[in-house]
Image (cartoon, rainbow, N blue to C red; front, side, top):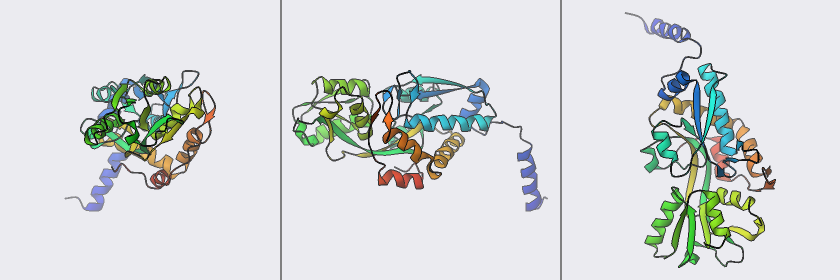
Amino acid sequence: MKTLPSLLAAIAVGLLSLPAGAAPDSPTLTKIKEAGTITLGHRESSIPFSYYDDRQQVVGYSQDFMNEIVRTIKGELGLPNLQVKLLPVTSSNRIPLMQNGTIDLECGSTTNTVERQRQVGFSNHLFLYGIRLMVRKDAGIGELEDLKGKNVVTTAGTTAERLLRQMNEERKLGFNLISAKDHGEAFLTLETGRAAAFVMDEPLLHGEKAKAKKADDWAVVGRPLQSENYACMLPKGDEAFKRLVDGTIARLMTSGEAEKIYHKWFMSPLPPKGINLAYPLSDELRALYKRPHDRL
C-alpha cells in the first residue's frame, strides 16, 4: 500500500503529464476545444454594458469582462487562435439560447435570480444596481404611485417586467404596462409620449438618457423598487467552467482593473455620442470589487 506522501507524488506526476492545452473536466470547455470556436451572446443596445458602437463593434462594461474571460479560455485550452463568434441576444431569447447550446457564454445585462438558476448557471456578480423610473423632468412624477392610470413601459423578459406586474396587482396601481422588445424601443415609447415612465435597471436608464436627442429633458427618479445584480450567464451545472469564469472576474476586481473598466464606461465620454454618464462607483459595488461573490 502506498504511503500518503508517495500517493500525493504520484498524483502530482500524473497532473504534470497532462498535455498542454488539455480541457479541464468541463463540457463547455471540451465543446469549445473540439469546435475551435466559442459563441458569445451579447446585447445590441444595453448601454453601457453591451451594445453596438458607431462602427457596429460590440463594446461595453460587461463586454470588457467577457473579452478577458475569452483570453483566459484561450490560454487554458492552448488555443491562441480560437475563433470567436458574436451572437446578439434579447431579454426574451437569451436563456433559451443558453439552454440549447447555441451560445457558450453571455455577459451583458442579465440578472442572476433564483428562478433563472433553475434554467442556467451564473458567474460572480459583475454589477449591483436598483430598478428605478425615467420620466420627463416636467412630468411631476417622482414615485411608482404617481403612475396610477398611466402607461408604463419596460423591456420584455426582464426582472423589471415581472416586478411591475406584481406591484401593479398587489398595490392596485392600475397602470397599463407596455412590454418593448429591447431597451431602445422602450425608451422610444417614452420619448414619443406613448408612456409616462420607463421602468428599468438604473444604469440602463442612464444609458438610454445618454443617447437621447435631448438628454436634459429626462430624469431618473424614485426610490429603488428592488436591488439586483448583473452576472455572466453560463451553461447550467458546469462547475469547472464557472470556476474559470469566476476566477477571471475575481482577478479583474481584486487587482484594480475592474475600477479602470468602470471609469471607462461610467465616468468617461461614451461612444458613439461622447456623452459622459457621470455615474459614480457605489459603495456596494466597491465592496463587491474587494470580495467578489455570487450571493443573492
